[in-house]
Amino acid sequence: MGKQDVLLDAEVFLRTSMRFAAKRNAFDRPAVEALANDIVAGLARAAERGTRFENPVIDGGNLEAFCDALVQPRPDAALDFIRQRRDAGLTRQGVYLGYIGAAARKLGEGWDEGRLSFVEVTIGTGHLYALMRALRAEGPPGGQAYDGRRHALFATVPGETHGIGITMAADLFREAGWDIDLQVGRDHDGIVAHVETLQPQIIGLSLSTDHRLQDLIRLVVALRMTVPRAVIGVAPGAELDDAQITEIVDIDLLFHDARTACADLDRLIRVRG
Image (cartoon, rainbow, N blue to C red):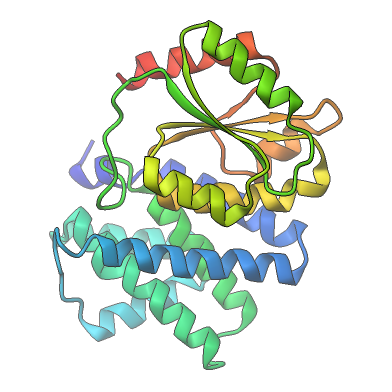
C-alpha cells in the first residue's frame, strides 16, 4: 500500500460521496442548501484553525482545476486530482489546508456571486466533505487522538421531544462503568458548540421519528467536521427503517438496545486501541 493510500481512503471517499448523493435526492432544496452551507462554512473554519501547522501556497490555476473536478457528477474526478497531487509530493496538511479549505471558500463565493449553480455547489460540497472524511490517518488539523476511554456523549437529535429512552440507556451504560455526558433537548448549535469544547470520541444520538431525519443528517455532518475521528452511532425508534438510516446518514453504528450497544462500543475501543 502506497503512502497516499494510507492518507486518503478511497473506499471511505466513494461511500461518503454516495451517501451525500442520496441526501440530495431525498430532501428538498432548502434542506440540501442548508447542508451545503454548513459544509462550506465548516470546512473553511476548520482549515483556518489549522494554519498554525502549515500554510501551503496553492497555485490559482490548480485551485480552479480542483474546483472544476469537484463539481463533476463523477466523484472519481476529485479523487484523482488529489491523488495526483499526493504523487507529486503534496502533504496531508497541504491537501486539507491548501485545497479543501480554499475550495470550500471558493465554492461559497461562486454560489454567492451566481457563477455556480445550485447543483454544481451541492455536488462540489459533497465531494469536499467526502475528501475530508477520507483523510483517515490523522483527521483535520487540531483533532485529538483516540485515547480509548469508556466515555461518551449521548444526545437527542435537535427537535426531539422524547428523552426517556436515551436517559435510560445512559443509566445502563453508567452501571456498566461508562462515563456518560447526557445532553437532552439542546438545539443544533448548542450540541455542536458543546462537542467542539469537549471533543468527545464516542457520540450516541437518539432519533425517535423520521420527521427529524433531516435534523439528524445535518447534525452528523457538523459533528464529522468538528470531531472527525469520533465514533458516531444512532439509536432509532422502533418504527424507523434501519436500511434508510445507514444508506443516507454518515454514521458508524446503529444501536437497538443498551447491552448490544455497550458490547459494540467496547469492541470498537479495542480495535482503535
